[in-house]
Length: 306
Ligand code: NAP
Ligand code: GLV
Image 1 (tube, helix red, strand yellow):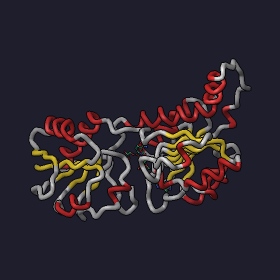
Image 2 (cartoon, protein in one colour; image 1 turned 90 degrees about the horizontal axis):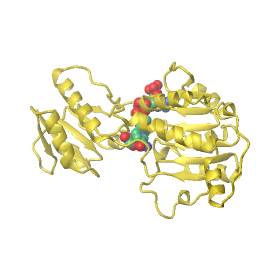
Image 3 (tube, protein in one colour; image 1 turned 45 degrees about the vertical axis):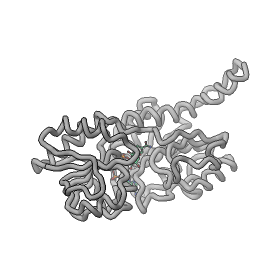
Image 4 (cartoon, rainbow, N blue to C red; image 1 turned 120 degrees about the vertical axis):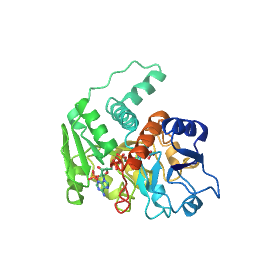
């Protein structure tokens, strides 16, 4: 069995060593133009040329959770596309989002600013019940995030395409329940995949439906958010702030207003990183299962786009 590795922005040597150790029976090579045909590919942001030269691929394994960029390419029509299935990302995402919600709810930035001025101040404690958190997307990451938030006793709501039941989470589904979900939320966390249905979903109309003093946490993809609409709602005061990890253009261009907006905190697409060792183990296990004809978790439905 032959596999090829083509992950831009990634140091290939440790991945190749890890995959070779985990799959000793496989021949695993770093892809280069004109390479021999392979059965499986391990990829992140490959060039179109990669797929054009490898039409026989049987399985394509992404080293991330989101496959929106891959689905923009012409993939081999018969290849099964598989995304990382947690692989240590869910706990990172839960940490990041709980941090963002708690930092906002407990006004920790306000305290930090006071302390920098040498002021020993107290603010009136806020009521947790006044900060319902809505999580858009209840998949591998969203469900974990929603459960983590519920442990802090925030009222937690969730929204997904199909109906769900998650302990401690008030679940909504489908477009018919979207407005009710937004109206019941004050803090909004986006963990949707980027698809034609979800592009631009965080816009003036949807964000206006959040409870006054709303707070937006976007950890999915930059193209979910209409940047100017967020800025307008922050400036009008309807939204209190935002914490953003993902952007339409990454790295965020130096002139972009998000860098310096006083109500926006940004991080450089780092909320849930691919963990190399865990991911190698997961992908090697899936390739082996695929070879044996066994079911594999994390299959992407190309029609649905995630
Ligand atoms: P996932 O397991 O595929 O879950 C996606 C969830 O979104 C599912 O609950 C799905 O509903 C729901 N959904 C999809 N389309 C919808 C629609 N039109 N309306 C309502 N709900 C919809 O994905 P995941 O692993 O949780 O990851 C989510 C996204 O996070 C990724 O696609 C990626 O873009 C992003 N991400 C970001 C980082 C980072 O570092 N910032 C890291 C990893 C991932 P159903 O359950 O009904 O199918
Ligand atoms: C990162 O953004 C991922 O989709 O894994």
